[in-house]
Length: 453
Ligand code: SAH
Ligand code: SF4
Ligand code: F3S
Image (cartoon, rainbow, N blue to C red; front, side, top):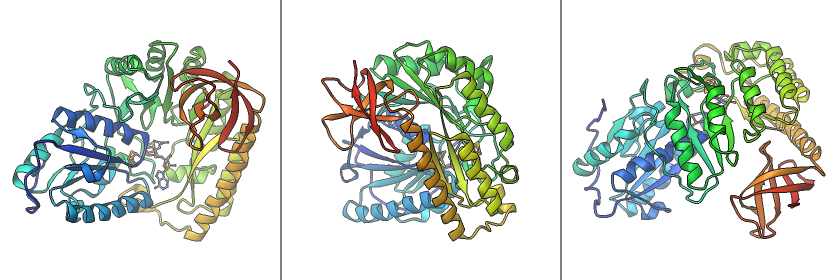
């Protein structure tokens, strides 16, 4: 059931002759995939995608609420759209995604916003847009669902002719990490029917894609009937040995040996696990509600390396969570040195209204200390990323060519199974091909290579 409200009269009827939609996406890979689902739904309702907001009848902003700075950036964008609407009063602007779910009706008070739809309400978009177009009244649907997985919708990729596709295998999250807004913005965890996942994987392979990334907030808790994540992974890997399979995100408390053994038995499942640790201090992990200890995490890392010595491990780290002392912080640096992550995403703690941390723990690490700690974490990780890349000097890797190098069209970019970016002269090769490269030199972010066959 949708909840449409009559907010106030806004603008004239939607130009139905040639409705064009422009979609802008913020946040994680799941949001990227959700935008593709939204495009599929809107194409079904007669919309055509356009590449500039100035050409659009409808602009949809798919938003992220994970940290305050993510939301501030989107509010800045809404100011841009307020001005654009002065030039084009018929333009309709909708806010989708996690910020829509978090802020609900209050977003409709923004002069730029005509439409608000949460992550489980995208099937309702054509109806909401229809009412908005004919009545001029602002519309909202932020109902969360226990069932919606958009399983029957084939996402329309924004990069036709692309190489790598995101495929959501589940939605929502049942964990209660105390700092995290996601369970509130995306609702309860639900897994998607494996048959629909395999159908989609087959479709993208037939369309020329050579890599899929299976997405979920906690892929290790995927379960649909008898199919757990390890079984799903094996079935996806069997679609073709020419298809690379990646996945994200693994939760240390749930990551099972069975998944590692499945990875090890399929060479096309990439040797990379993103395993967010958040903190190296047991006191902080406990307060974060992560439900694993530092020792448990290190044991999981050891097991990954035992089963797949060539597997890259990357992580997420939060600096300055509530009550984090210098000693807690040192524990994080120490854990990073012990594991030697290949790469990391690193953040300052940002209090999110309504979360357990916001309700129960004071956000008491001073902003300057948060910034300094984050800087130290970033500096340490840069050293370790460089070291990790240096270990690859002289070695050969199979890479899937994804595109041109950012710096030169004469160079191509592809990734190793470990998800490291390699740049090399094209030498007559094309996007979508597999080639073997040798690493000649490196930075902390890139391996500079030559093709060897
Ligand atoms: N489901 C994934 C991560 C989702 S959010 C997991 O559990 O690993 C991605 C990352 O954002 C998190 O791993 C965490 O490091 C960071 N993050 C989440 N909430 C945050 C907050 N309130 N402040 C700072 N970083 C946060
Ligand atoms: Fe957030 Fe934790 Fe769920 Fe990840 S597992 S989305 S950090 S609540
Ligand atoms: Fe993703 Fe941001 Fe939502 S990280 S799940 S878009 S809060």
